[in-house]
Image (cartoon, rainbow, N blue to C red; front, top):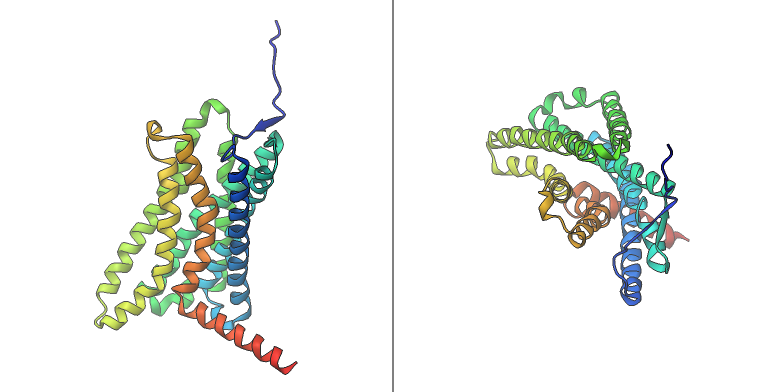
Amino acid sequence: MTRNQTFVAEFLLLGLSKSLKIRLLLFGLFSVTYTITLVGNSMILMLIWLDPRLHTPMYFFLSHLAFVDICYTSSTVPQMLVNLQSPRQTISLAGCAVQMYVFLVLATTECILLAVMAYDRYVAICHPLHYTFLMNKRVCMKLAVATWMSGLLLPVLACADTKMVEKVTSVGCIFTLLIPISFILMTYIRILASVLKIQSAQGQHKAFSTCVSHISVVVLFYGSAIFMYMRPESSHSPGQDKMISLFYSIVIPLFNPIIYSLKNRDVKEALIKILRSTSKARQCK
């Protein structure tokens, strides 16, 4: 006995609004945001590459974060811009599967990368005399490879049978959200304890100031992700879910380079140095 089966070739997207004027407004807003995100994160990568003072473990991992954010926002925004201009908003089954996997890979990688960056700050503040040994180039490369491999492998769970979606989501949240954020919290408890042992207020401020940017990024990223995926099912609404998705897929990659630029003296000095050398080069011409 045979059963009728329907093969789904594409999905019809509901979109953010049915109004053409609003869609055009969103197209302009997202285009500007996407451009600033690409420029900001590319600037971080360029500064770290060009300035030898930034060739340290902290900025090595920051360069990976900037690269992840470029890929992260590029995995969704271009398709979103196309759909905002298209009268029929659709995506193929294959395109949807690829986009979902790439998005999950990058989101998972960023979750774990933020935990690795917290470990780097822990070693720098709690074990400063052993920092260069514990966080040498070989160790940093191993941590980076492990982060990307975890990002590539963990989202494979999302390709399981649809009947297991709830179980897969629960397991995914444990590995990509709860474990990393618990590790980060424990790390900063140890950091806080070490900072409070420092005698001078200036020394305390200097030690903790290196963590401010990272803490800001962690709060933004994990806060929105936990609110999205770990709140009760009864509190979900399509409109609210769209807004949260837009926040952590568009706004956070935009904020990350701004946070690290404004709150990091080394990055600001590197940027000023590059701008001055560029200005001098133009004047010589």
